[in-house]
Image (cartoon, rainbow, N blue to C red):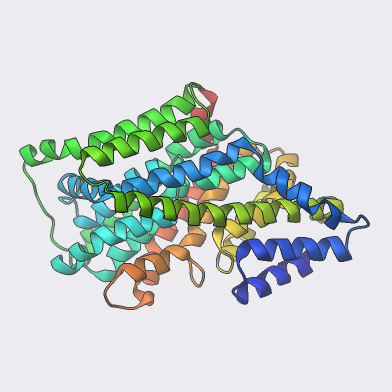
Length: 426
């Protein structure tokens, strides 16, 4: 049954069927051929249960928060300010790409939105200053992945919902690894450009007066992050409530920056509806598939299979990591999460691993899937923002950053406290 589900997933996705529909079809197949119960009679109740959780209201709110910042021009002003602080380093403007992606990740919660925003703002600069297209575009694609690790993260909300794990703890657990990985991206960029200065383009130096003046563009974003995440971390607000506060603050910031027109508001609402509908369909499909798999006894079958293999806890973890790396080449990230979490996480938890820690590790692996061909969404988003060149250039450019992600996986496995220290202080 496991092999049938996996092959069915690949075939249906290969036919370009929407991910949510694929998950429902797989659930129907399992219910019809592998379950002794008439599960289809409960389809309506299962879908209702999946969509009625108040926790999920946070998803459209965080999506709207990011959309308001993009449409209101806040992201472009942030990029210009960070350019003045980081472009002196070896690699020049490439560091501004990563820094902007890091800061925008702290408000958007979406990798694709982060990559698209930075690419739209940065690409004209790359062409004007004659940067190497591979490293420049690769940094944007990789930096965009931070959107699902640095809180608020939509993917962490989905993980917390599916595994019944505390979302505030997941948010705090993802913060330090996210910042460390951003620093790793900048470090490897500086190293590459120190060895090959021709790849990084010209360093740009600004006076302290210009730098200090640019802080006025960064202060609103920092305050927004502190209010949204701080209210969750301190227990003053739920993720949903803090997201609503964040939307209100984002609108005020955009209005004060003279960037929130009526057209911008309409575009932000349309984008939010479109993205939220896609995510909710996927979650409902995954919920029904999980219900069918549980009724068919898949969890018991996997547990028996792994126990029979005689793997240690660490051996099991390494097997799961290898599985996610392999699947990441072929399966879209959100569908990879929702299709595997109900199966994998109970087994990982039974082996003694912390679910909060594994959630962060899983997101890093999912981030890798966003920039590995042939399915990596961020690759296509960045290529779409370019005026020329090939997709191969973007693929080559992300290689150093994939190495950093692999190192982060190793660090998280060796030092779980990197993710668990901050939640333990709550």
